[in-house]
Structures are given as structure tokens and as C-alpha cells.
Length: 615
Ligand SMILES: Cc1cc2nc3c(=O)[nH]c(=O)nc-3n(C[C@H](O)[C@H](O)[C@H](O)COP(=O)(O)OP(=O)(O)OC[C@H]3O[C@@H](n4cnc5c(N)ncnc54)[C@H](O)[C@@H]3O)c2cc1C
View 1 (cartoon, rainbow, N blue to C red):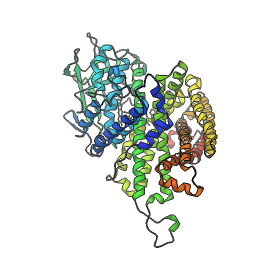
View 2: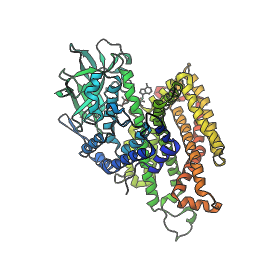
View 3: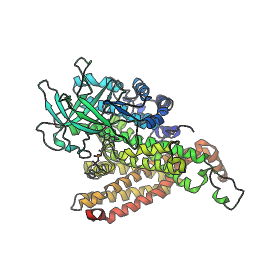
View 4: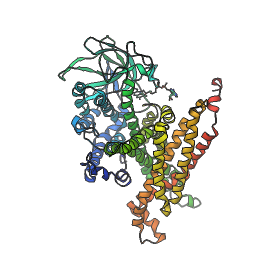
């Protein structure tokens, strides 16, 4: 069976037709990134992903990581692909060339990341955190720290990690007990234990630079007393050469449901009292800095989610076209009727269209937020900059949590389409399902994302960011209303946006009243509804772009022959598919979201009222 990851036609459609990224090449910031160059970059990423990274995916899952004598062995094939990513400049795609980056628009980097993560999601976490840790140093480090660490991290010579979690401090990072004491030479002695740390130990790079959260002796309790430190695995001397091994001990790795190739480590810092760190940024401002990395990681989880969902959908479609089982429903009474590919069965089509609509919507959502970053960089005035930055802030919890949950559901549906074969290891969807479960848990669990949306993001700038999003939705709806074939879909999307506004205001008010507990019990359903409305908009936007393209291909064709053309002409099928999925989402998914809005308006408080003893 072919190995399937991102759908190139759809990637190109989103980049060039929906998001119109050729406009970016008109700006000074991105003037090198014309259509030809972007296509070449995405081709290169696709080739690297398919030829080199994808073949390591099943092996990485099967062999996983091995812990021996304090060392972690990653799957054997990972070393070469890590080196290739570093040498090709794929770790620092969006960063300034002055610090070793490629200076790419984020939306283009997202298209590349979709290929890489789809090829081997567990592996891609290593370069992802190396970049995130490097970005922290680039943003908050001193000139000396940047000189010592940045180039090697962005080039893939040194890895990175993020040390937040402790046994008693998971979601509640403020409860951490790792401590830091200042030494006369300005370094800090760090002591503590961390768990669940991805890539805290690995054999891919000669050194690993750990950003570690710890509390300086005497600092306030909670998040206000947390500082951030650079703790290299091997100390880096002032001239950049490597010194002694630091006192960072990996005690073991976790056996997990999925992402077996990614090492999840328990670590002791300072077992011999000799763990040294450098303060990164200001004392007690560590959480603010770490949020920088976490926000990048949350958007990264959105891309991971899209990538695996895309793969699962493509495998399911291919399987459904090949697997013969059962007769056609219209020929059930005919004993001589042959078995048909299962894609002919309406129930399989129901699952496939659900998957297609969500994958397409997630691709548009993740790429759109990438484009918002590019618009921030190229904005001509403060008002525009604040518009795009506001949309990033608002949409980050949706990108993370909604994509995570939908990805898992898409993978579940893919297993269902395969039937029994989907449940066994010989076929790829079983691994995708296991790998995708982590997305809703790490980088701030989905419940926490929902609270962030309700408590912070909705009300930011007095609700202006939220209303800007609604205005963007309405702009698309008013374009669609003018197209006869899309007007009914536009009406549904617009009505849903209006209902979302009403729901947001009433839930937001309740969240600030004595009904706060009940309000927060509805935070996650609200995030899901908002995700649905955003997706319905992005799918409508796709349909607006696709409609004239389809018309061109059906011009001068008799009514009864149109479906024939759509069946036989791949471009016509592609554009028709854009319209069908928007229609499906508006008429089959949005009504369920509107039901959930009714539930929030009813303000059912059962979850909160239920006595603990009754659970
Ligand atoms: C594979 C893997 C890789 C990881 N990589 C890293 C890493 O590299 N670095 C790192 O520091 N950590 C890492 N983590 C840790 C991860 O971020 C935490 O597991 C996550 O933050 C949740 O913390 P917890 O597991 O302690 O769960 P808990 O915090 O105990 O949460 C349990 C449940 O309670 C909910 N909950 C908790 N508090 C609240 C609240 N106040 N309100 C509402 N609901 C709440 C949560 O949403 C969750 O559903 C990783 C974890 C895994 C499994």
C-alpha cells in the first residue's frame, strides 16, 4: 500500500488559492518567496518527508526508545534524519537568517511541517523542541547566551527540551519545587526532579540544552516566583567548547500508548549537588518566558494533529476504494450482484465526508494562523498588526485543543472504515490512533485550553479580537451570499456566527458572576462550538474560491453530463469536493453545534451540582 501523508493538491489550494500567499512576495520581508520558490520549498520538504522520514515511522513505533545505564537510545534510523533536517536548515525555517534561520513565511513552514509530522510525528518532536528552546534563548537570552547556544541549536548540532512538569506539578506548574541557588560566579545550582520530559536524554545530538523552570531560594510561592534557567547537558565554556558533564541524570523513560520513538524521561537535577544553570531572562519572570515556548508548542500540536488526521483520512479513502465487501444497496435483492468496494456504502461515505471536511478545515485553520504571523510581520500600521496578533491569541486554544480532539476522532473513524484490519498493527491507522491521543493532553490539556479561551481570550482587548474574527466570518459569508449555489450555506454559517456571539456574551458574563463554576463546566463545549463555527467559515471560504473554478470546468456542458465530468476530471472533482464539504459541514455538523449552544443557554448545572459521593 502507498504511504500517504499530506494531500499536495489541497496544500497548494490552501496556500495559493484560498490564502493567496503570492501577496506576501510583494512585501519586503518575504520578497524572495514567490510562487515558484514556495512550490520548490514544499517539493523539497515533501521529498525529504516521503523518501527519508516516512520509512522510519513504523520502525520507530515498533522499536521505540531504550533506556540503558542512564542513556537513551532512540530508534536507529532517527540519527540520519535528524542530521538531514539540520543540514537542510529545516529546524529553523521561520527564523531570521541573521541567527541561522531560513526567514520563511510561517504559512510555508507549516506546509513543510505537515509533511514532516505526517511522516513521523514522534521523531519530529526532537527538532521541534530544539527549535522552541532555541527561540527562548533568541528571545530572552543575553548576547553571550545567544552566541554560545543559538547557532548550534538551530543547525541541529545540539538538541533542546522543556523542563516544567514534576510529579506534584503537572497542570499546576506553580506547585513546582525544583530550586535554584545563586553561586558567586553568577551561575545557579539547581536541585530537583522532573518527569515526562521529552528528549531530556537522547543520542541524536552531541549536547542538549534544557530550559528548566525552578524557584530561586526565597522567591514567592506560585507562578510569580518561578525563574527560567539554561541547563546544558554538557557545560559550554565561554569560548563555545564543551566542558564537563553537568549533573543532569536521566532515571528512566516511560512506556507509552503512542509516540514510542519520542523519549519521555524522568530526570534528577543535582543528584550530586553539581547541576549548574544560567539564568535566562529576569529572576521570577520565568513563567512569562516559558509561555513563549508553550504557545509555539501549542501551535505545533495543531500541526501534529492536522498531519496525522490527514494521513488517516487518505489511508481510509484508499482502503475504501479497494476493499470489496457486500453488494450495492440498490442491488441487495440480486443474488448475482458482485461485491463492491466499500466506498459505495452510504455509511462509509458518511464517515469519509466527515473526515474530509474536518481535515480540510483543520488545514485551513492551521495555515491561516501561520498566515496571521506573516501578516503581523508585514503589517503597515499598528492597527493591522494588532488585528492579526489578536487573531493569533484568540485562535491558539482552538488550534491546539479543537485540532487535537478532531484528529483523534478522524483517526478513530479511519480505524472504523478499515473494520477489523484497522485494529491490527499491519495497517497504518492503528498507530495513527495511538499516536494522536497525546495531542489533547500535553502542552496544556484541552480542558485548560478551554478555560484559557473563556477566561482570557474572549475578553481580551474588551472582546475586540473575538469581534474581529466574527467580522472576518461575515465578510466571507457576504461574498458567498452573492453566489447562487452557496447562498444557503452562507446563511447557515452567518446564523451560526450570530449564535456564537450571543453564547459567548452570556457565558462570559456568567463566568464573572456567582455562577462561575457552572459557566466553566461549559467551557470545553464552548471551545468545541467555536471550533465548529470557525471551520464552517473556512470551508465556506474554500467553496467561494472553488465555485468559479468549477463553473469554468463545467461551462457549456449539459446539465445531465455535469456529474460525468466531475467523476472523470480530477480538477472538477477537486473543486466540487470543496463545495460538497462546505455544504455537509453547514447542514450536518453546524446543527449539532447549535444544539450545544442551546445546552449552554439552558445553563445546565448538573456536573457542578452532583455530589462527589454520587460519582
Ligand atoms: C508523552 C508526554 C510528553 C510530555 N512532554 C513534556 C515535556 O517535554 N515537558 C514537560 O514539562 N512536560 C511534558 N509532559 C507533561 C504534560 O505536559 C502533562 O502531562 C500535562 O501538563 C498534564 O499534567 P498531569 O499529567 O500532571 O495531569 P494533571 O495536571 O493531574 O491533570 C489531570 C486532569 O485534570 C485536569 N485539570 C488539572 N488541573 C485543572 C484545573 N485547574 N482546572 C480544570 N481541569 C484541570 C486536566 O485537564 C487533566 O484532564 C509530557 C507528558 C506526556 C504524557
